[in-house]
Image (tube, rainbow over all chains, first blue to last red; front, side):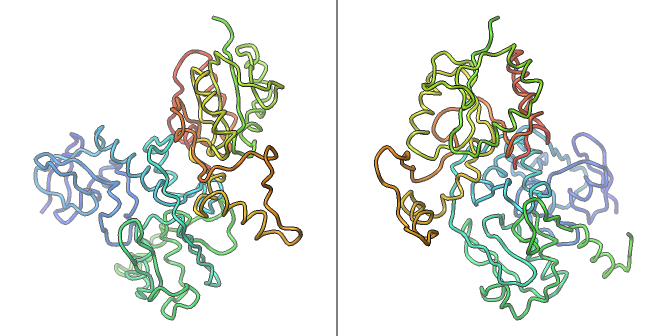
Length: 237
Length: 181
């Protein structure tokens, strides 16, 4: 059953199993995302895709909210813009993001969103946590300073590779991405070294060893390709 | 309207922002027509003057000298501009912050990393004492405008200065004006 709804006043028709994000994309309406990655299940964690839905006083994540008949959705109000900028600023304040010396400089989704939300400075105090870098794997590295805990690597490892090497330890801002029972990456017995986590990472947190400033180009689109190839036997290139 | 009284300051940064400023090449002649440079690392002026219209601050606040100067700058400048990533975010200058306070950082630089005659320079008046945590400029004084970039590209600097000379607020929108790094 198709559903009819409006997004920013524009009439949209969508399948009943589609999310607001999917319906908006089909209609070429842009909603910023960060923890969403095509090919992985959505978790609604980063809150970048929050939208206003008439009749709800809560803001709803477009990536995990299904369309409904007659829904009136707003994706780009002043309130949403203010929250989105706040979210990005808080992410920059939470860990040690130094674009100038980052492997992902120029290819970073966090950096791009900073530009999109108009961030010219961060209004919050930087926390400057002391965090480590894991270079124990022979091909890849993980810099926790640059991690935003989006869990795209966790989901790529679990849902696409099937290894579930990667998980999250701890609570809140002190959470850490770990391998197995928190062992150095190079000592993980379940990691297949497939590199899907590196492809999935939106920032410079996961990188190929030997990459220097601005050299790390992630290949996130390849994950959606893999999923389509595996599940639907579609090999569009 | 007379010439803008214009200052540039070099705090805890690498001077790359000033290098990028010099990359304005022949536009510097146009700039010289519109502003009077009253204080700058490229001008031999010892004390920060009064009644400055626009001050570009390169670098983060990293030591006692910066801390004192930045308050004088705020007091005597109509517009204070955080010029480049170190001023705006702390950037590379602030990468020492997770290590801890000033002493830990000095030990790391002068003791742990030295093979020959490790010693921390403590004599008064030699180098300004470090403050414990490096701060972006706006964490210390109110800032009127931010120019991100490490360094900000010359085109971005020019767009901002051109607007200020014309008495307009610069449009800090989009990749050309806002990309960090």
